[in-house]
Image 1 (spheres, one colour):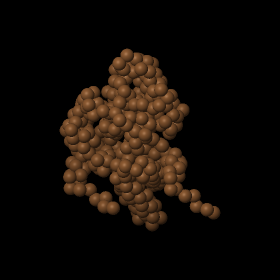
Image 2 (cartoon, helix red, strand yellow):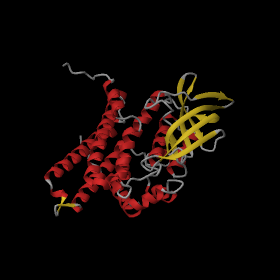
Image 3 (tube, one colour):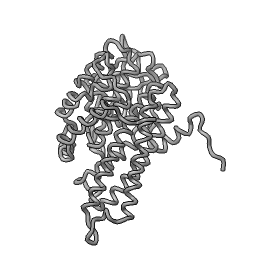
Image 4 (cartoon, helix red, strand yellow):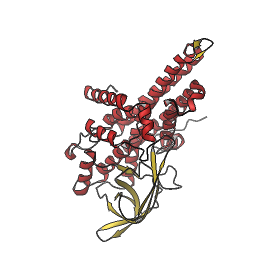
Length: 375
């Protein structure tokens, strides 16, 4: 299978990297983290001008109909630059509208506004005490007049406070359904906080909060799982970019740090460790690219298998490369003054978002065709 990017994809990646290198350096990123909002409207506008917000939106709705592979190109660059803007949350929200919406009326309007960068979205996957089980949904939906009202809580909603609309799973007559809630809807409470990687997350509380149901032909539990898989594909791509940046930062640091009068990069034992770090990153890249391709498969089990395999391998690589990078940086590796510490934190959060290594090993093993070796 050929994983070479085409000319258009490579040009898009190059343009995004030039912008990030010039305008989104480490110090600029840290300044945004320290603001009350935790995100930058200026950079969001720039992303819109570059076409990032329109990329995942269907062409008929003002977008470029970007495939998961196209999105992979973008997410790698965002991961490399440690971008903290709510792009992942919005892209996953767009996929939710695309899969679960009717393609008409309000659903179309939201997609058009998202493509234009006018609104930001977030999907509220998790509830308190549910851990990684996205089907452990206790939030309830009740029919009221022409619409619905939701009651319940959602936890660790990435960029939930920065979103203008939330896509919220809830139980309707015992079954999972998907709903859209506007940020300013009544009886919707938001608790915003910063996560260890400098990003933002929120707890959402609803008490008879007005909501609109996404009533497309496929808008239940299976669609929720597919939306989560899309989010995982994007996270794996972001992690690949972060792994590349961390490997580069570590190699450069070992060329500068001296011991016994020579750069420590000349020590053979450390060279071996950095080679292992590179191998982990390359294996994570390969399986992430495969997951991006297989996401579009009509065979749901094939999609699940590829996505979980990618999440496992990326999680393992994130831990190994992160730990080695910190050790090779010495005490500096755990300080806020170097990008390596922040890259490791981001990789740690990615590893635990939408299921950690153990969760996806179990998911992979539960799929048809998996055979346990006899001892």
